[in-house]
Image 1: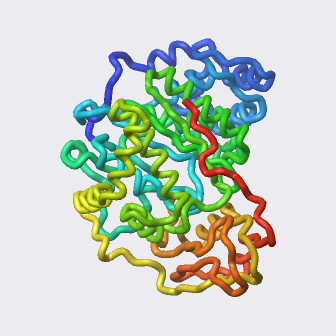
Image 2: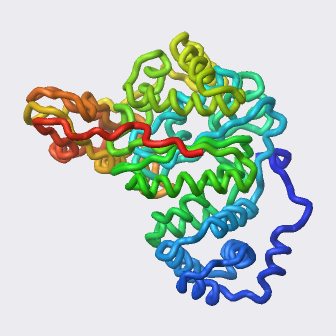
Length: 447
């Protein structure tokens, strides 16, 4: 992205941090955290800059990360870590876009295509959505991968076109470029191979450093919890949400977290092109109820923040624009502006049906296992170099709580080159005589 998209500080951060770190030693910092002691702001800045300039080695940072995973960080440390990571690169300047910009992030899950619906819906209500998103290293692609499943769709726009598109139609989603939070990119790559991903302080600082660098005025975060999410328990999800709200507020960015269920796939479609089609279905007024409920909840919060109005007023406007077709028209306008051709969208040519072995109520669908199986057939990546097969994936015919007859369809499978054992897919479903699952979709809203 072009230089003028970023805010530059009036001093050389690296020079300041190097001066601070003259009398510091990474071994002493590791030892402090191993002993459960608090790290100072200067020590945290030193460790981030040292890792970036490679004066601190991978094996040293790995030891420090593991000490953080085991012994945690307090709120001050996490705020300082987030700030140090944020200051490692450039910060987006969205001031040339009129209106209050509200960004949305999801901690990730199986079948999570909310941005495809949410962004045009919010934009249709008069709140500008200027979003930089990423490609996914997970079960299925990220938002950018889903958009790239639309033939011709351009995710790499010039600064001028990005700004112009948002000012003209209220919406643009582009691939993250530029020197945004390089410390997070390097740290996350190390965490991924050292078993240090699942740490509330590290997750919070990673997410919030990127959101703060993206330049939005306000932030909404969908914190997924459950079998198919990074965070497995409600207690952990609340800690993460409260911490991210605290970080946002400390940077004068109003932040709202919504804790939502990911113990089963969101909606029915799992796979990039299939998720685009399901997103279109919701924009046309149909689609799965859980996906629609989540989109309406997140959109209401975003519109309330963006228009600075009451939630009731925002909810009425959001529902109205989903029902009257304005959101769908905004989506079509958005796709056209970024050169996508929905008429050429294709799905896997080999289609199979998974049938229920007995009658009963679907009590559980293993989201994590389905996500991993989707990745195994090409819907996601194991490494960032992997190519995604956009057309493959699964579409659920039954959700948790639904009654199913013996030999009735549970799920459709869309394949291309890779195959999957159908009996393994069947093992993802638990069918019982009685329904015992009562978990709500929206657990809590944290402000």
